[in-house]
Length: 283
Image 1 (cartoon, rainbow, N blue to C red):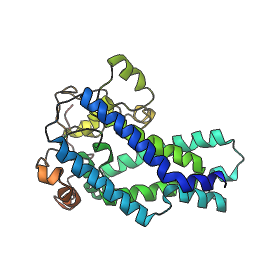
Image 2 (image 1 turned 135 degrees about the vertical axis):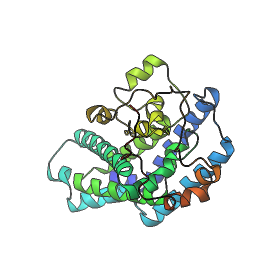
Image 3 (image 1 turned 45 degrees about the vertical axis):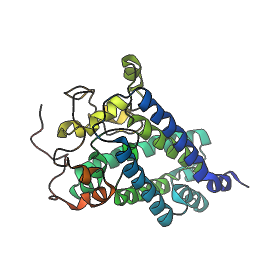
Image 4 (image 1 turned 90 degrees about the vertical axis):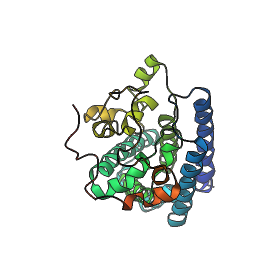
């Protein structure tokens, strides 16, 4: 069995193992040392948020049986993509893939805030009235499909190695759970890590109800993109414990935290109601 065949056969197990392991660690950390007091029942939020995650997983596996790994194997077999045209050491190819795909995720994140139709989908993620490890995985199914299509296109253009795709997927899921967790780090450690990876306090600013704070800190993994392109914000105006999570207009629990409400949320309100083009931001 080749390495690619082994990865394809065990991709689900590899990703699931890392997901469950990191999820367990962050969940226990949240219980032992929560950063903020939650406003809603944890059971209510977890049942609905994780229910949406389960639904999305079934949908993706139905539409994309081989997922991103299968696309990488297909691209390699046909010699498609930049990295398949040149004889690059695997380590460098993996690094190029991880950094490039992370940059695409950053650009995609800005796009779903900037385009009215896409903001309709993405606000399902932002409408959560609390912020914890499950928030990092709650996305509308249509946004999940869009993300997979963008990811597959990126893999084909890059010619990303199969092992690099798996590593990126594991890192993305792990750090999304880490930086969405209801936890905090010692101030000096947080300040140090922010030069490299997104911390919970850094990304939590992005989930503020204030439009200018929502439209900052778009990175999920690496912080260099926010710093390079001027979208970095150190802290919310109200401080980590004093600002409000969510979206101003959507505060009804049945609409924001029940799975039925989340599924219908993109189809409510005016198309012009999206965050990034709001003109009355506070200075």
